[in-house]
Length: 533
Image (cartoon, rainbow, N blue to C red; front, side):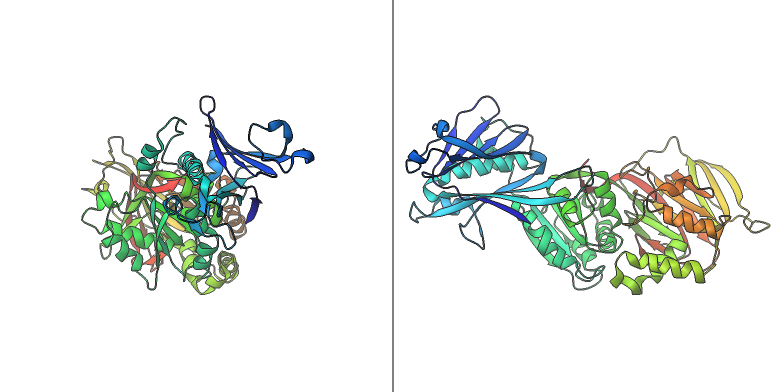
């Protein structure tokens, strides 16, 4: 982290200013004046120094501008400002509460600091943000003015509150903007087992700078996130932040879905930090917000974003009737084998998929035979708040006869009371049904998918695609150009059914699930994820 310190000290003045602008100045009697200017569009910091050597021992006031020259002037958009904190004066800097300092009985010459944290991005969209901190020192006798400055900065930086007027009563702002409280769930065993270190080294300080109160849970066993979601008190947390891969998010949604108050619980805002291998929801969220896919970019979204709708898909196994609540994807065929069979390569991170793909491509020539039904037209369908499979009510999707020869596809259409269903029967290399654009960090599988469009996007690579072409298609998935290839099809639908002819693997949200036949129905915007749009 880059830290810029301005060792200016002494008294602060809160000046009158035109319309939407207020200025707070920090004077060093001998040398510097630091000016924080709070405007509706941005935060400005100006550093002035005394250029008059004859008067350098005289006390400087903000009105003595003729003796001052500007050392630096910077302005930062409010979207880049995380928050302001009061700190101790010497390293290691400790965060102090304003109430503690306001009631402090220490000498008036005791010095403290005000620190403003920003996440600055230079360059184009998706460029990485870097953390920058401004620090000025002040005497305790000026604490009231400094607290006022920090309160205004935090109000303007808070995503829950619009830009207030300088005339707004700060007590009313502080009442409305009570500190946010997050439940942070970290899975230390996910991915390359770096999630815990990532949180403490990169994310925790950003949350603190935003004035966020944290309850931290480090998971110790599989299924712990499901228990937390099942028993969590609704309304206690502004956001539940998952620092892990997609597996822990999947666990959390299963717990919400099992609650009696599922309809309300499923709307618990969720934040995601990439601590796993696939990180599909997180990379899709970063892509959506034009942020870099890394811990800082994801944490910035959680701090500065707002809860937005997210589609969920309810899956049901046709064998044991078990249901799964999914936010990400259903995998069958090559992609499911790739996901599960690469588990023993987790130490490689995302590279595990590349290594396993090469092995499977050269040493496995398997094709996957089955039937895919999807709802092509449902003009009278209305979204419901219940996570159900109502589009399958009174609908029988019968098996189809196998094609008469290899690489041939059989197509069928059936009209029902719930709409027109279509079927594709034959051999497939890949079937990947997605809710979001990026089901993993290295796969731009569905360029047109939206978080709340109400559709599942079925990505098919048919068996007629030659193996040499298959390699090109799989490599092209990384940047989304695979959709231009022959034999590749993307189908938008609200409901679907996938039946394998063999004992093939199926994955929901990257997690292996028992069964060889599944049906699913999309529910539009029923969940909430913290995003920037």
